[in-house]
Figure 1 (cartoon, rainbow, N blue to C red):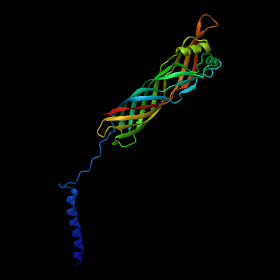
Figure 2 (tube, rainbow, N blue to C red):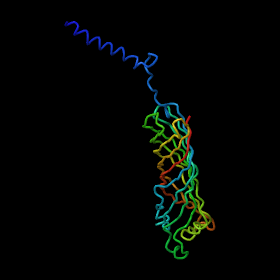
Figure 3 (cartoon, rainbow, N blue to C red):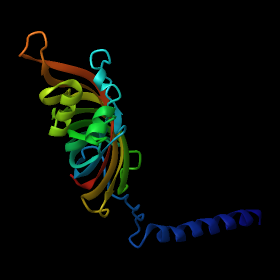
Figure 4 (tube, helix red, strand yellow):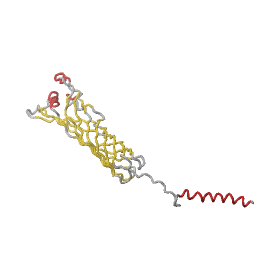
Length: 273
């Protein structure tokens, strides 16, 4: 009697287990396959190309020419104003490992209009102008960035942050007629003046996002904001009479540093391989 009480529950449990097994196993008797994960969007070996438009906005779009007051007292108080500019950009990135990429970028020619303000009071009174368009500062930048993609590699929305370096090439500025007239009035300049700017290396950072145009698409939309740190040494050269050896002339040079730190706003499209 006791044996029957023990065996009966065991038999019921075994029967329930055997009858449940075909239901879990599927119609063929084998275990049902585990659903596969979505394919990776960005993973080791991925290459991404991007191209688009950029707006280069200077962090400090105005400043003071800090020339030697003893040698060039007529420049005391002279300031500059610079405008932002729209241009284009291109970049190529490669992911050596998951979540990390190395990116080479190029920002095309941007022309920042250069205005002189804080003019000599006598000149303002005589000519009735308080600002002079001197020319434009033309620049081109190349960047090297190391980017981190924090989200899972299967996501079709891929934000990233990066840090690296930039090299910016600055063209010299030939002063326009109005600016040359000002130098002739306050500094006795003869002939055209020219502003030389040294090329610059500096650190760079960025934050951006790639959005795929569908999970199965290789095309993407990109938006990014970059910051380029740039302190530039400038030399203003102009001809002046040589009072000691008249009628010859000399080249006067006025040197100063200006900050051309820039925010670069990028928007474009891309393709991944």
